[in-house]
Structure formats: structure tokens, C-alpha cells
Length: 119
Image (cartoon, rainbow, N blue to C red; front, side):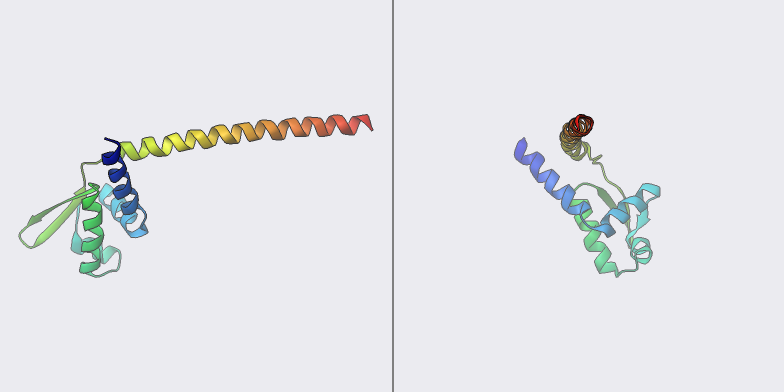
């Protein structure tokens, strides 16, 4: 289970690490598109876009369907629930650390004010 989730997280984050692939997901969130349409929108070759779509498809973030000579892309079955949970756990950890740091800063400010009044 853990190995499977790690592999999925690795594939997802690797796919999301590229700005073009994030843009493709954003575009497909608006409407399905052919690889040709995506290539034109992102000013790249068909081969380049096929590679990007392939990475997204391997991660389960995009699904494609070939009808005749046209390969249409749409958002895939994955909803990034595991990725969201992983990020949220770290967000909570960092929020707690920053809250502790805020407390320390406030305590230092109080001590500084108190020391200033003593003089």
C-alpha cells in the first residue's frame, strides 16, 4: 500500500512539475481538446505535446481516446486526493511551526518592552 501510494505520488508530482503539463491540465479543465489543438495552444510540435500528454496519462491525470486520426484528451480519472492529503499534512505541520514561532516572537517583544520600562 505505502509503496503503491509513493509510486503514485512520484508519478503525479513528476507530471505536475512541468509548467506545460500544468497548463494542459488547466486547459482540459475547461474543455476536452485534441493533441493538435493543445500543441497549437502551447506553441509546440505534435511530438512534444504527445510526450507531455503521455506523462500525464501515465499518472492517470489525463485520458485519451483515438477516433479516426484524432486523439482527444480529457481529464483523467484521478482526482489528486492522495496528493492533496500529502500536501495538507505538510501544510498543517508548517502552520503549527509558524504559530509556535509567532508565540516566541511575541514573547520576545513583551520581554523587550518590559526591559525598556525598567531603564
